[in-house]
Length: 385
Image 1 (cartoon, helix red, strand yellow):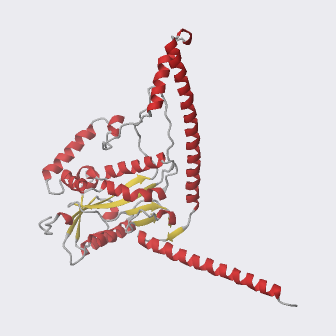
Image 2 (cartoon, rainbow, N blue to C red):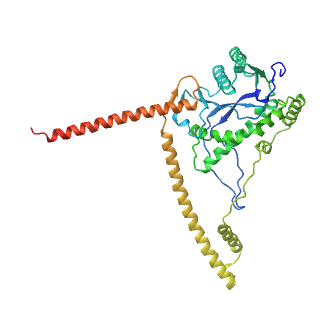
Image 3 (spheres, rainbow, N blue to C red):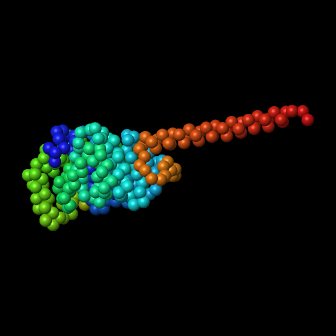
């Protein structure tokens, strides 16, 4: 296949696939607490809406094309057009939030544009799964007309042979969960689709590293082409799947990242240690020295309790303020796009700007009209009868 289409450069080997993501579902976390703390509760977002992300990577590890995001519904909300987005991303609303034949063709147009494919361009090989929307006559014909040959993976083997599944989508979802956890720690408990679009650029920047993409193609045996590596990957996955997976195995799927040591306030821990020393002793039998230490410790306990109370009040006020700000942000339910098609973020930004300018002109016209009416009323008041 490579010889047939004269593929000489890794940039002409492309892998494309979709992955689903639940907008507000974070993963589990390890929390370090004192041994006396038996339970710890943390608020978590309740948003279980799913979106579909279409991504493509090249075997040379260069920056991938902008993502194509499929969202449930029929409208694109203004709040989704986050400032953090680059501008070439596309948002495609569908009734289900999943791809279909029409959406697949739109994504192929998006891919052709950013791969700079065309009839006068070198051939490219597009690696993809055998989903029915990828095998329609229209999809294959449009791809061939733009010098893109579609190579389909065998069924039930994409987890072992497709580079995106082998080494990219897992860290992508890991960084997505990290973004949700950061939002929760910032008291943003309503992690919505708007929040997701705000974090999407940073998620992709953390995921699509050059070495991550190159190693994904290498480990799957796709580039450099190696049937031995492909067979090895399939067999290793078959062995791992034959074993009964435990909860620990599932948790181990997340890539291990460096963790910072826990920060412990020295005063609180010193005070707690002293209190534990006196816990099992009879105060009536203290020596003079122990009695003085006991008094100092009790004063410290009182001080720390007051500090804890003030901190609790401060956190409560902060949480109320942030919740109010988030609620105010959520009030805006303005639609910026409705109907078929997948507009780019830059197109949506231009629409928003045009609408805002129109509204500002209308406000200025009304204000000027009221001012003229007030002036005329004042002049008529002073005119002699």
